Length: 294
Image 1 (spheres, helix red, strand yellow):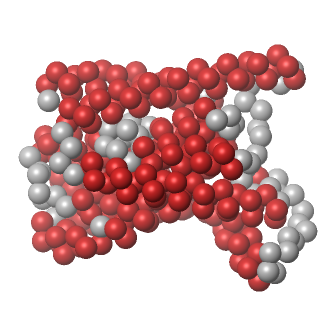
Image 2 (cartoon, one colour; image 1 turned 90 degrees about the vertical axis):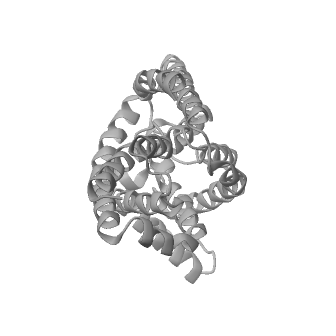
């Protein structure tokens, strides 16, 4: 693999990982166009790790607070600590106080367990999957984005009519059954062509989570999912070094990190304005053209 090819793959990964268009599906298409059939799966996971770093930096405040709450909970043997409510928007969504933060941690664990169980099954389907099925996945993702956006807008209109509140009122917290639904959606999103972020956010919106919480929670729970995938693929580390090379790998990861952070920042604004259906206008023709030409 050349440095230019790795940079292109890193750029595709960085943008498509966060925008709800399926990074794994796009990487498969680009590899096909480049004629790269021998790239180990771990290379994709390394690019995912680069974008994971972008998630950690973007959500550093809420991640730091959740870890502090976790450590205090362990030290206090489960006794909740009284604390002043947090007003910082990047923290208040999932951890406005100590008790809510502990509850969020439990929900993250539940979501991760469900995702892991489904991921063990879908991992057997990822290898050697044809581009035809990937293009079908693009269309499925488009359908999820449109349907969840419609449901969310109807809910917002109903809420405004009932309570006189316009738009998407901010409601913090994830219930246990919402955590299970989101975990299932994220597990399905491990299939190439189906966007992890798109399916996870759609699952959250379908289950009644408000937009901001859906976006924040979706990317927070991506952290253990990506780390788990990396651990499972560590056996291919030598193969990456042999078939990709160190410089192309570093170049690809660097581009994936920078483009990923920018894409994430842009997407969060789109989520809060409720315009996920915009991406369906890209995925539908992409999927149809892919079915025709691939």
